[in-house]
Image (cartoon, rainbow, N blue to C red; front, side):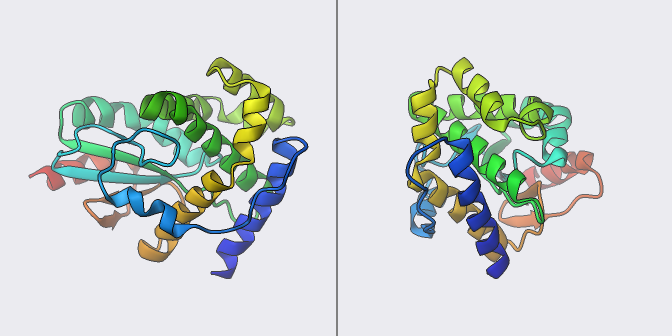
Length: 226
């Protein structure tokens, strides 16, 4: 897809600034690296499927989200806590979060979304899915500051430091071609397999579900669990 390639190229260019001096990211795709995503592998390590809940839950929800998408931030702050308490913690839902840093017409936001997602995955190298989701939660909560502020690098460095990631590790993380390729693979699956056009996008038991209001997800989850 030409549009998809444009997003990826813009994101790679943006990383040179966010990651400071150093080698440029490889601009390769690696859909084979995301094959693990449907294998049920343990959710530990940066390249693993990131999920919450019971592996054998009757309902699987995949959310495709961008960290610089304001609608995604709203969903995670206002709707997700109820989903977590009533469906994930109760064993009804296995929730998978996949990155889809695609913001048409805004290459800087694409680059920042990639950077935040890569930092979250680097956090998983140290503490698995717990570290990943903690970082994602923080980035959604502070989206206005780092995603739309004047100095994304400085703000992301603060968030990374709070998670125990120093500046050299931060820069090394944003230079990891395997992480960018993995996220590229997530985007490719979202657009090619599920034909998602924007974020957040929800796949419930393999079907792309569209909602008039985010609260409609509760009815969809109840129906899927029956």
